[in-house]
Length: 429
Ligand SMILES: NC(=O)c1ccc[n+]([C@@H]2O[C@H](COP(=O)([O-])OP(=O)(O)OC[C@H]3O[C@@H](n4cnc5c(N)ncnc54)[C@H](O)[C@@H]3O)[C@@H](O)[C@H]2O)c1
Image 1: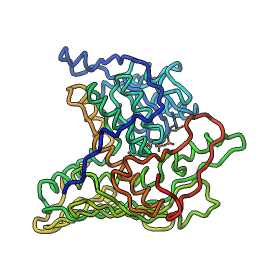
Image 2 (image 1 turned 60 degrees about the vertical axis):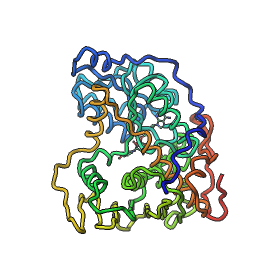
Image 3 (image 1 turned 60 degrees about the horizontal axis):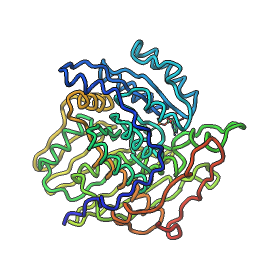
Image 4 (image 1 turned 180 degrees about the horizontal axis):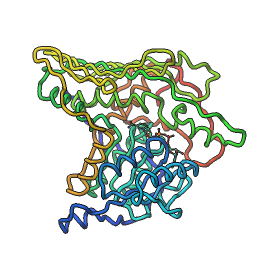
């Protein structure tokens, strides 16, 4: 029996986002599509000028010669300066963002959205994403939103509501689940879905990486600045590493399972290497078992341990064979009744996703990842809930959870750090 789909009636837009007032995008792409031109300029804005944001804007500029970066925003001015110096050097004439289009602060998004954009790239820490997606949909711009889409269930429900609106407005909503745009992954998952290993029984996935580095705290830094600089380590900002990083593996489990949500999961997790003195409040390992009502199961192992081997492999077990997927390897192969090895090209998946994004904006076949990307995000959150509480958690429980992460307003001041969760003691809410 197929698990019930997302209960859309239950969705409440919980986000307190300032809806960007009806800012009409210039929508150059649509105008030029109407006149048959292929090389219309697409005006892009970026919010979150850190590592990935700088990378994503570069990928966008590399993917389409008629993309221009016209506005940027970040809460930290230094990040904007570094990113803009990079863009000017690497993409002269296409990304010389003027000083009055560089916005600093928690309200930077609204100002970027008011800069006459066709599309926006959202690459801040994930907690801000639901409100950002909502504001971007209200502004009528096409959206590239980095993964994960949210860090809690209210955030997921908000994104589902925004996605519905985006679809009605004919906007693209592309996610940063980049493996979906990788050519070898596309080839092997297509083969799996065409019956290359028979009926799928089980998936086992690993996301075993190393800890993220810590930025030193300077005496004048507020809690907020310090935590944003070290956001990977703070539950409210990143959702813990199962949601923020291992979500790639969770997404590939979801992909293998045809984007059908599991019925329930249970999990283990904790801090084996991180002492109580270690700043931040996330776990350093998780092991999750996901169950589907028809008996399929998936197992995820994710850890952030130093001095230990790393691995990022997906094993998809079918009745007639096993598929091995390792994008880091790379290795994409099937063993079994009909062996197969990927021998096609491997291109930059980050540029591929932006090629799709802009092609869709130009030809009206908009890339729309929202349904499966919100599922993948919630599957990861559900695994975290199960590990933190020690209880098994159903899909419906996870989706309807009231637990909300982080402060209700954002300012560069004090931020309380919540205690590290303890299975059997931390309650599900
Ligand atoms: N798809 C991938 O392979 C991949 C790889 C790395 C990161 N990511 C994702 O990209 C996102 C950013 O990660 P990163 O590594 O670039 O982090 P980062 O810390 O390098 O950059 C984040 C930037 O956002 C800014 N910021 C924080 N809060 C903000 C707000 N409310 N408004 C505006 N700016 C804000 C920070 O100052 C910082 O410059 C995360 O969601 C992460 O999961 C995806």
